[in-house]
Every structure is written in C-alpha cells, then in structure tokens.
Amino acid sequence: MATRKSERTRQRIVESANRLFYHQGYHNTSFTDVVRATGVPRGNIYYYFKTKDDILHAAIDYRLERIRSMLEGWTDSYRTPVERLHRFVALLDDTGEALTQYGCPMGSLNAELGKADLALQEHAAQLFKLFEEWLTDQFAELGYAGRAHELALRVMAVGQGISMMTHVHHDPALLQRERQRLKRWVDQLAEGDDSCL
Image (cartoon, rainbow, N blue to C red; front, side, top):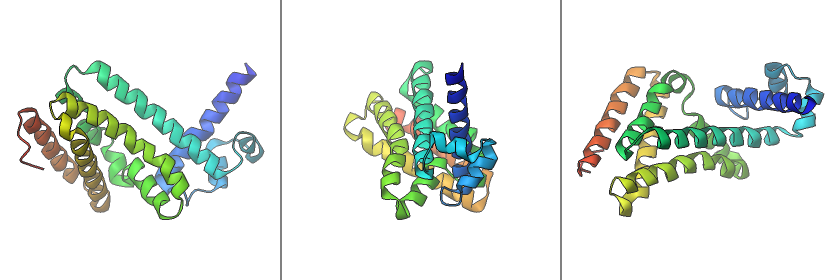
C-alpha cells in the first residue's frame, strides 16, 4: 500500500513537471514551480529526485513510454500503412490547441536543450527517434524500403515546420491547411507518386 502511494506521488511529480516543462520551458521552470504544481513538499520531492535534471530525465522517459504505447496502439488498430500514416498526420489535429499556444512539445524541448544542455538533449532526441523508426516501418511497408527513412525524416520535418509556424502565427487555420496538404501527399505516395511536398 505504501509502495503504491509512493509510486503515485512520484508519478504526480513527473506528470506535473512534464506539463511545466512544456508550457514554460525547462530553464524557466524552477524546483519551486514543481513544488507548487504538485502540492508535494520540497523535501519529499528530493526523496524521489535530487536535481531538476533528474526530474527532466523522468519526464522524458514518461513521454517515451506514452509515445511507445500510442504507436503500438496505432499499429494494432489500423490495418494498412496508409491508415497508420493518416493517423500520424491527424495527431496535428488532436494537439492543435496546444501546438498553437506552446508549439511542439518534442521540438521545443529539443531546441531549448540543444543550445546548452547537449547531454540532456541527447535523451530528449529519443522522442523523435521513436517516431522516425515507426514512420520508417510504415513507408517500408508502403513499398518505399530504399527511401523509407528519408521519407520518415521528411514527414517529421514538415510536421515540425507546421507546428512552429502555427505557434508563431497563432493560426489554427494554417495548421488545418498544411495538415490537409500532408495528408494528400501520403495519398499520392500510396499511389506511387512522390512528386509533391
């Protein structure tokens, strides 16, 4: 019972810190912010995490686990690679409000850490790698085995660009237009046409 309560407390700290790191940025989030957001006393947080970096590593692991679970669910739920790629593109819709307000959680974290915290950024880069590997598998199954990783990187790059410009302009309509363009490109690829995007 005590162990379960301890696990719940740790999870509460990680989830709260994860939100703060996304909404405020890692460097703009203090230990005090985490204390306030969780309602867990500072000394108790130190029991689980000695430094803010330790909390970030746990938050990245939390994100990785959620992404892994989501991608496995998509693989199980959608029959064809085209359906799975459409589901990936629809993620832009699912997260549209947050993207408009805060940008992409993976992109913003990696950009922030890449300026001064390369060891932390190396861990955060795993968030992108999970998507890259999954997308590479989809494009390979679609018949583009020789170019699957290149296409996966292209989709990720376009998605990041859409996220960034939506955030910069605070324009959900831009997100909708570009998402539709990306969806059409997936359909063209499925027909063997790689002439656009």
